[in-house]
Every structure is written in C-alpha cells, then in structure tokens.
Length: 183
Image (cartoon, rainbow, N blue to C red; front, side):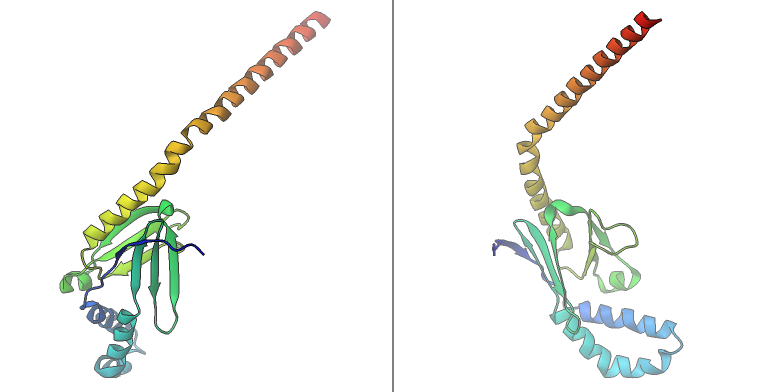
C-alpha cells in the first residue's frame, strides 16, 4: 500500500457545531412533525450529535488526492484524485454568512448535476481561500506532468489517421476509375 505525503490538513472552525444545530433546527421547524421535538433537540440531543459530527470531520490534501472523512454514526470516506477535481467553489448560505463561515464545495469529473456522486462539501473550513488555492495548485502540478509526457504520442495517431484517410481516398479514386472504364 502506497502512503502519500500529507501537504495540508484542514482545520474546521469551532462555530461549525452551531451551524449544524441551526440548520437542523430550521429543518425541524419546517416540518410540522419536528416542531414538538425542537426543544429536546435544542437543549441536549442536537448539541451532542452535532458536537460529535464536528469532531469526526477530517480532510487532508496529499500529493495525489484530497481525502475526506466525516460522520460519527455513519462514517464516510472519500478519496478524490486531484486530476478529477473540476472546480472548488466557496458557498455562503444565510446561516453560514451569519456565523462568518463558508462552505468549500469540491466538484469532480463524473459528479453530474444533482447526483451528488463525486461531489464533497466541506463547511466551516478555516482559511478556505488558502486551502482552495493549495488544492488547485497541487492539482495543476499533478495534471501538468502527464500532459507534457503524453504530448508526443498524441500526435502519432493523428498522423496514422491522416495516412488511413489518404489510403481510403486513393482506393475510392481507383474504384471510380475502374467504374468509369466499365461504362
């Protein structure tokens, strides 16, 4: 098993459990079934759940991938190769903005709109702009290496295709010539 060098670990803001609690409270408030549960959620259970959620979040940038682990009850681990990352977006909803936080959204090739596959959201990243820039810089280093190494072989199939087309053209000309002689 290959171990990769960790370039940067993500630090999550200490206000993140408050964000989780506020967002889930709005969800409970929006559902009529959740309204009676709201006091229990706000005064104890929600604080415990979201504190554990915050403590279980980890993310790190390595030389070849972005590794994300989160969830204390249902653990999720995603290892995203840097060459598959297409965009890193900073998002601020009203609750995040109120708390002075933002969410870093990682979009990947193959993570189509609405599927959630390949996409990761990292709310409350301390120095989100700096982390985004570090990921993009490392991605560019990873993708630039193979691009320059494969630049020469890509030209060969184009020449081979052109030669094949010339052969096809010549064969068609011979066929036309033979058909013309038979008339």
